[in-house]
Length: 291
Picture 1 (cartoon, helix red, strand yellow):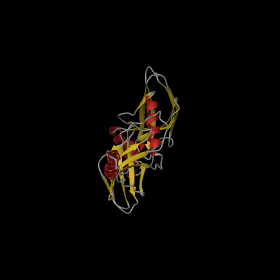
Picture 2 (cartoon, helix red, strand yellow):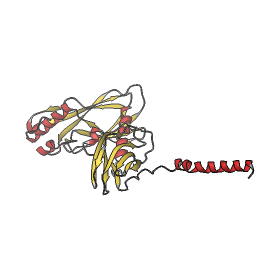
Picture 3 (cartoon, helix red, strand yellow):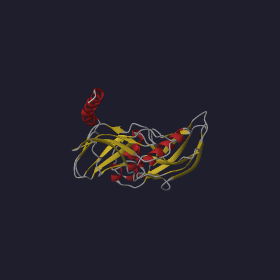
């Protein structure tokens, strides 16, 4: 065999000898475990979560094996980033858990979209990452966003300030009371709003009915003014105070000139709340708690 041909043959053998190691080095890595098929997530709020500004993220594991949620991030186009948790959550088979997070600020110029939850999960098969679309059966995110953005629009026109104290006359069953709400329009700006009514609550109603009908127009730059809401107990029941959660939060029906409309909740502070409870008890002849 000529020397040149023999050299080419040796080179070919040497090349073939190193192919298997190279192919072994390019082999596909082991695939990550799949997301559990029967893991679900939903968004909601309890009645105490609304005034507290919290969001409830509910995880449900309908599968037959445990799942550990190492961390998760909630993403929505109408909420700023920061809705996340990095502490592990253990979910047994057929288990569920509610996680409460402080709501981030709303994005008022964003188009609504689905709520997505990015997760890092650990199962018996290993750790994996994935994304689930959250169920929002009560339109919680849209409602929270609407309330925040309505509040922002109202604040650009005027501040609604509840009084420090309840104004009242008389005593006992003949006692009559008034909530004096002060409007402080923002000076040097433009904008307006209309307040149609203030809705009665589970605890308090208007003296002559249920709601307070106002039909009030307010414009930025107006002089400050005060309105008086004559108030009476919605019912005389000691349990109404003992079980109260939102009875001293007044819902104002507001529409602003930038197109936002809805109910704006204006809460009483602790001092006014205690005085309202005492008034309720006195007028109803009950031994009402101080707050």
